[in-house]
Length: 361
Image 1 (cartoon, one colour):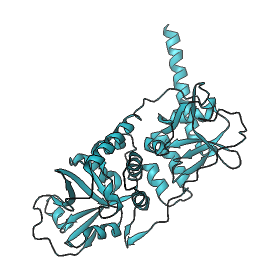
Image 2 (tube, rainbow, N blue to C red):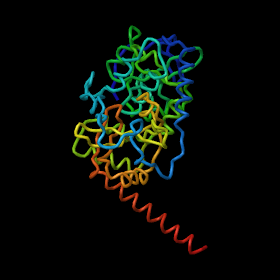
Image 3 (cartoon, rainbow, N blue to C red):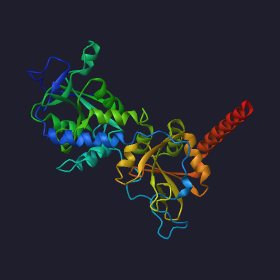
Image 4 (cartoon, rainbow, N blue to C red):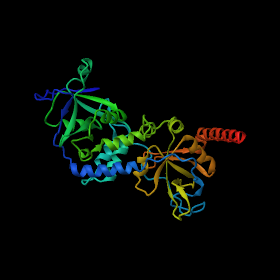
């Protein structure tokens, strides 16, 4: 928790919320329309797991035999996140979210909302609190969070770093505490506290984006509660990163991008190929990672056993490409043995169940 010392505002709200920038630069009608479209698109990703995915049918959209004459390359998106930065010592910036906020167009569209929602699922966010947060907590008082009010709707204000927060203080300097929280806790608080949504970096380009509570709820429902893979790929890479990503796949499963083949013959799934011709199944930590690519394929959830079965059924796969929209990581087949082991165990259980059914018959 960092503390900025400023003169208290005399007419501050005595309740647990402090209206800030009450007439935020938000076109509510436009945001409501875009948010509704975004929520509907998120609803479309709510699919039931399937018992078998025919990985072998072809690369989605590219029904050609191996070797392909023009192999799809690994994505041009950043493989790793930008180097860690701190606009104030001790307060790491959420660089990925800050970057996508700076890229928000003047006329906010559905794609921009989904892009911001995707990058909000990782890293640290900062909340602004009027007064001494430690004293408020010690006294058992609710923290007096800064909010924005637009046409009687309340939006929590959150910041991607100290520079964005300092810009938000503006000329109305006041005694302000800064509370750093993992993004999942901040987003969960939006829902639990009954806010209508959240605004990031309200003094900068982020003010044009409102993430409505409905979209946040849907995104959290479909996410790993700890955002494990998102945070791993957003952080510094170590020799243990790949192993940790595999552990997350074992624990939670993941998503793939699937859709009808270009020739109309069955279903295909999205792959990528290395410059050397290696084939990698595209795997996604969240359905938003698929939607952000703005392709026609749809996200499909798979369990760890189903991911392992996909590897077993397609011996030509060289591994997984995780979150190709970036930051991404390539996991080689030899590092995915744990998934194949789970698939073998699931097959053994199914075989035993079938035997029992035959005996009963």
